[in-house]
Amino acid sequence: MKDMIPMNTQLLPANDESLSLAARLLADGQLVAFPTETVYGLGANALDAQAVLGIFAAKGRPGDNPLIVHIHDRRQLADICEVTPDALRLMDAFWPGPLTIILPRKPGVPNEVTANLDTVAVRMPSHPVAQALLRACDLPIAAPSANRSGKPSPTAARHVFDDMDGRIPLIIDGGESDVGLESTVISLAGDKPCILRPGGITQAMLESVLGPVELAGSILRPLEKGEKALSPGMMYKHYSPDGQVTLIEGAEADVVEALRRLYAHAAGEGHRACVMCFTEHMDALRDCAPHDIGSKTDASEVAHRLFNTLRLLDEEKMDVIFSEVVPPEGVGLAVMNRLGRAAAFRTVQAKEITS
Image 1 (tube, one colour):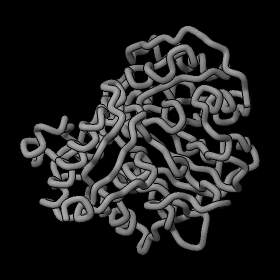
Image 2 (cartoon, helix red, strand yellow):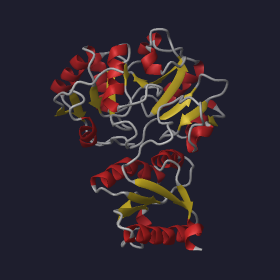
Image 3 (cartoon, one colour):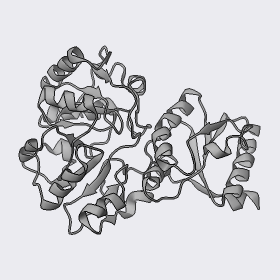
Image 4 (cartoon, rainbow, N blue to C red):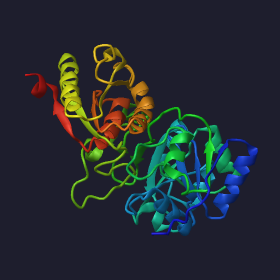
């Protein structure tokens, strides 16, 4: 892995001057963190293998975890991947936007980008700052989320600075990310379209364009021994705060009571404990250091708040965290994909606590 040389990290507002600097750094084989509509990305020239290795060094990311290539113009795909008719339909419907498409790769894409797979992941972000940067450098940019590997993804520039200060030369501040969860990843490289990572573009939305779309079995479970990560975000434990997260499932009243009891027990043992709960349960759980993750009726709001909440828990040095869950449907599937990995799939049935 490429060695990481400590450096001064600039955190600059998005403007013509900072974007020009970012474009020069990227062309020179260096790294730049920038906002997208999903989360902040850590970018390098996707066609420069040495530059891409710098991403893995800065993040402490395993080399078997593929990266997503960001573009601003479909013509850039000619050097990157084979574009299928289904891919064109998805691009027409959802690009620019939070959808990543996995396609057969072209020979010019370095193995460091694809984790030696014969496919490559591509997307066109809709965030105006990301678009401006991609146009300014006119390069395909490989960019995972701009956090240390395994930590919650950054949805604000200050999160990136917390993780990357001294590790990269530049962070472009473009405000908070809108979506709050990484892009949906769909593979078109197999016999049938298959969602590998859920996001804001839901299965139903994709099926409205393509017809039947499968869901990968690994979405709500850890990878099996020897199973390759075909998409970013598939590791067993990922998106995790420093504290231990446990998910509480069951009927609403049982979950609220279980959260009370679990919090009281953990706090009684001297832990810095808290609960992540829906807005509707904040009052009932007011004595349990509650953190509001949004309404139980709005999975998109929960998605938007999730990573920011997990990072806040690190700032507060919480070491035991109990969380409500959402139904794994629509955007809720994306929320549970992230929460499951944040908890390393540690789940408790509320009835086991309350009965």
